[in-house]
Length: 171
Image (tube, rainbow, N blue to C red; front, side):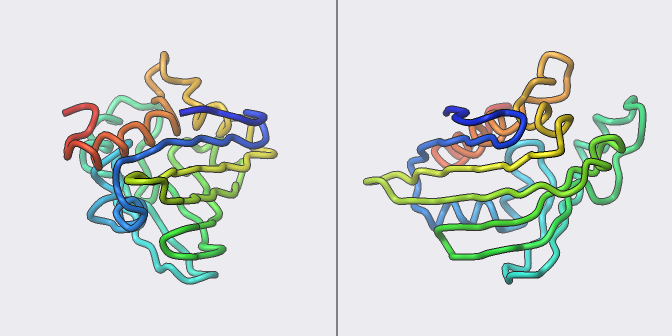
C-alpha cells in the first residue's frame, strides 16, 4: 500500500485485494460489513447522488473511549454521496465528528475506485484534505503511536485481511 501525493492536501492509497470488485464494493457500502473492519462503525448508505449518509460508532468503540477527553458522539462520520458507479467508483463528502477540533475542519472529499486485476481488485482511495490538516494527520496514521489509530493504511489493510481470510488483523 502506498501514499502517493501530498499528505496535507491529497492522500492516495492503493491496495490489491483477492476478491471481486462486487465483494469489495459490498464491504465498503453495506452496513453489515462496515462494522467488521477498520475501527468499526455501522454506515448506512443510500447510494444515490445527493443522499446523506452516517456512520454510528460500534459498541467496542464507545467502550474504548470511556477515558477519552470527550464522549463518542452518536454519529462519528457523516457526509453526502456525490457520485455512484457501482461497483467501480464511489465519491462522497466525508467529515469526522469524533474529535470536536477535527470536526470544525468541515467536509473533505473521499473517492473509492475499484478495478478488476486478474483474480483481484485494485482498490484506490483518494482523500482530498485541503483545509483539514488535523484530519490529514489522523487519516495518514500519524497518531498511531499516540493511540489514535493507523488511519487509511490500517483500515485498508484490515479490509484486505477480512476479505481474503475472513478475519480482521486483530483476530
